[in-house]
Each structure stands twice: as C-alpha cells, then as structure tokens.
Image (cartoon, rainbow, N blue to C red; front, side, top):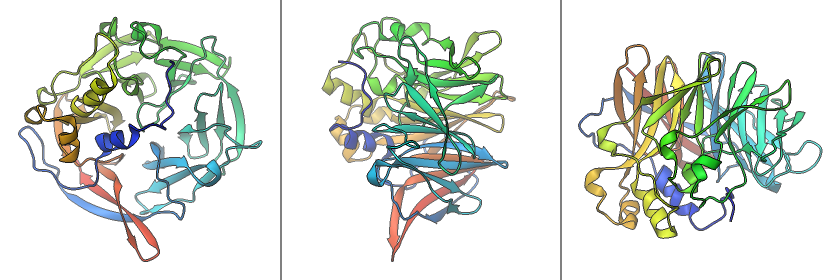
Length: 378
C-alpha cells in the first residue's frame, strides 16, 4: 500500500467538516485572543461554473494579493477562478482541458501562480509538470527527472511553491508505504527544482525529532513561504514550530509558533489504525499553513479546546467544536498575537486587511453569491 492522495474515499465529507466547518459565524472570544479592529462582510458573485471540490492558493499582482480557487469542472477540465477583492469580483476564469496537446493529462492537479501570466500546474501522480500563461495556453512541459520519482504534492487544500535563487522549492512525495515505521527518515518532503539543469537540486529533510515516529498521511506534506527571496519558511501541520532554511548556508533554524491553549502536537510510535486516525484528525491540533505578509508570519491553527477534548469525535463534529485561530508573529518586534476566526477555507491578505471566507454561499435569483469577511489587523 503506497501513499495515495486520491480524495475519493468515505473520509472526505468528514474531513471537509473537520477542516472547514459548515458555515461562517462569530465565535465568543477566549482569554488571550486579540480583538480585530473592525469586521465587515462582502458578497461576491460566483462565476457561472460553480466548483464544489476546490483547492486554493494566492499570488501578488500590482501590490495586491489575488485569491485563486481551482478544481475540476465540466469534462474534467481544470477550472481556475481568481478573486480580486479590491475590485470586488471574480476575474475571467482560466480553463485548461484534461486531454489534448494543451491538457494537464491527469485525474487531478495542483496550481501555483508565479505571476499572473506564469502559472504552474502539477498533475497528480505525473512525472511532468507544466507552465501555462494567463490564457490557459501551454508554454512549457517539464520532467521532474528524479531517480526516486519525487513529484509535487499538496498538503491539505492550500498549494504553495517558492522561488529562491532561480530555483523553485516545492513540497514533494516519493513512492513509499505510508505505514512504513521509518517514513520520516525515508521521505524527503521538500526539494528545489533547478530550471537550468531541469532537475532537482536542494533537498530538505524532516526535523530530526520525527525519527522513528509516524503520522496520518494527510499531515505529512508541508506548506512553504518565502521571505525577501533569501529564506524559506517551512510549515509542518504536526509541528508547533516553523522552520527557516537559508539557501546560501543550507542551515535550518526553528521558531516556536504556537500557544499553550492548543496543547502539544501529537506524533505516533506506529501508523495509527483507521478509528485512531479519525479521532486524531478530529481532536488534535492542526497547524494548517504559515503565510508571510508585511514582515509578519501568520499561522492558521485548527484545534479543539481542552474542555472539549473529552468528547467523542462525532460529538465534536456534530456540535461544531473545532475552532480556528490566526497566530500573528512580528519578525521585527518579536511579538505575538492571537486572533479568533470562524471556520473557513480561504485567507487572503491585502495591506492591513485579512479576507476570510469560502464556505457560506447563497442564491439570489439567478446569481450565486459567496460571503467573505474582512478583518482589520492592528
């Protein structure tokens, strides 16, 4: 049994609830949370082709961050929607066919925008990845050229890549049994692709403390962020620290980026069974991703409060007991803040504002509207 990230199994409806909840609404504050300066909402009309199963990413364009949501559309085409919050609308969708000379040729794919006119598509389980332009036209096809069959893998629903020193750093996966007792030692989670040589270059291993440990397959893959084009930020969903890798010195450092209220993250001494794995996903803290913006790191944390940990997993889901927090760390002042957020899917930063949403939609005549909340950061 090998690592498989095909999301076609009975756990997906459960996990969607675990990660994203059922709607957007305010939650009562707990001690230690900073209040947002202001909150308001906006509704944006969805494009005609509604996507029910989506992943997301962001990119910067003209000093503003664009939200990208994408997923399978009609005829298994890859449909890429972009949200411009300053204009308050969806941009013209990009459609990439599954088959044909311009197709991505896979049952699924992940997307990352380097710029508005340079978007990379990473087909699932494929030895190739592709570069497209903003019109959805194929520009170039790349072969991973990895002897161990390393290929791009997305952790959760947020797809990332980072360009440093003309190399593309991506989360990768290799063919290995996910119940292998040495999985953290045998897997390489991050590599850089050198476009000059058309092959992988740098390799970054898991933290040393994971040796002889195990974790559910859904939390193996990291997400990445870049700081000033000279530092890579690594977020592991199972770690209360984030890691910084310097591409010049090849040195790795860490920073504790959590809070006592979330509890200590758990690793297993062996691969968990099905029931144990579900309970873990429901009850244990999940450090979803870390995003760099305005000299600050923002970490998305899903958790269950200590008083609710004694509940059964189904009770936590049924009564919406999982919570979502935003941890902000100022890299200059070394100060930390915690904000409470509604359970949501998409998070986009523009200047001192955070746009949150992606779950709540409503119909108004022949229109479908998606609700986003806009928070003012201090």
